[in-house]
Image (cartoon, rainbow, N blue to C red; front, side):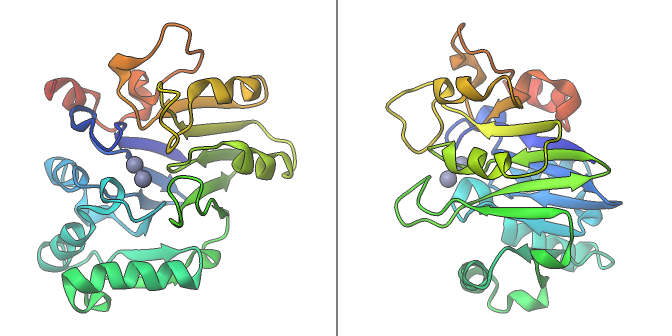
Amino acid sequence: MKFKFLGTGGAFDTAYGNSAALVEYKGNTLLLDCGFTVYPVLRQHQLTRDLQYVLLTHLHNDHTGSLANVLLHCHYFNPDCRPTILYPDDDFRDELYEFLRLQLQKPEKYADFMPLSELPGITAIDTFGLHAERLQTYAYIFEENGERLVYSGDIGQPEALFANLRGLPPKATTVFHDITFSEQNTAHTYYKKLIPLAQDYHIYGYHCDPTANPVDNPFPLVYHHPELLLTPVYQDAVH
Ligand SMILES: [Zn+2]
Ligand SMILES: [Zn+2]
């Protein structure tokens, strides 16, 4: 299992790309979120043809903004590629379908829809309302070959996710967690709230501007780890 981030920025940190990742999972490539900067990165690296699955944490624009474009591109230019959109529950499928229907008229022309439960090893954690009021969001836990990787999505309070992780059989766990360096920002997790969890989990911060990283932040940022980035060169080039 491998995570390659396509971007690590927050909604307005376009220099670092929208937070999203390609996950190599059980021999398939899964696109985890698809914000408005994702399509150009996939095109630049000729990766649109390799997408088997798409999984979204929520419907904010920095997580979905180029999804319709990616699906159209696959349909018209990569005829062997027809992504399957995974959905954690029926309500979210309905929201996602409506979101795509307004852009594509007939989403089923461009993608298949499949319950996440049909792909064993990936668990959705319902984080409804923890990022924005009345907004459906999810975190995801990926397990393969004894490895456990967690992707927080956007979440203002980390407790619900970690309570869930504590209920799982003990295992070395890497958590990619959204992080903010501003205590006033309640839509994302203030880094100091993660400090009590630092000894039990290997936590990397993402969805942030790395230039705002305070010196007392103990958590490594995905941005600073080239092995977690699809294109460290691209990231440097856009600065
Ligand atoms: Zn976001
Ligand atoms: Zn969001």
